[in-house]
Amino acid sequence: MGLKETLQSDLTEAIRSRDELTSGTIRMVLTAITNEEVSGKAARRLSDAEIITVLSREAKKRREAAEAFADAGRADRAAQEKSEGEVIARYLPEQLSEDEIKKLIADAIATSGATGPAGMGVVMKLVSPQTAGKADGGMVSSLVKAALTGGN
Image (cartoon, rainbow, N blue to C red; front, top):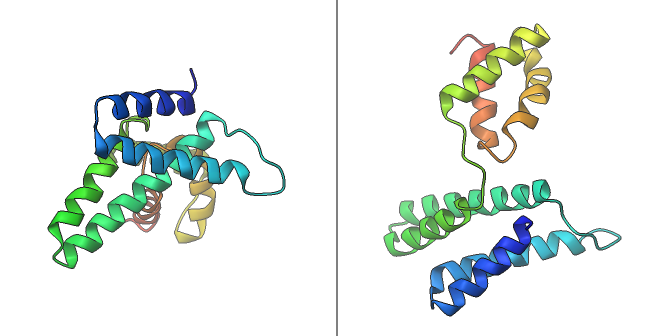
């Protein structure tokens, strides 16, 4: 069973059990997946890897919204966004720890021989496929920058 089918099955189960948070969040995610499928010239079915990219993007939106609401003093809305992010996280691969990312970066630097900030693109090109869906891109980027500038 693919990831989209799992989401649809879990949506049915959430509706049956009257879990409004889960059903609402899965509906939003399925809508985002459908929008991605029909965007462009020809409608197509997304692979599980592409669905994980959509899920990561949706999870990031929830994290950023929760921070914005918390900064604005709206703890109730921040909690709602955080809860939705937790529902989405159930469908994402296990996230890499900071130490695991640093090891991947060190391996990429050793492989590419990159030095200084000029080598950032080369290192990111090697690290990105390994961290896709498993780590926040902004965090990976900042860790690569730190490693290349000696701020590790």
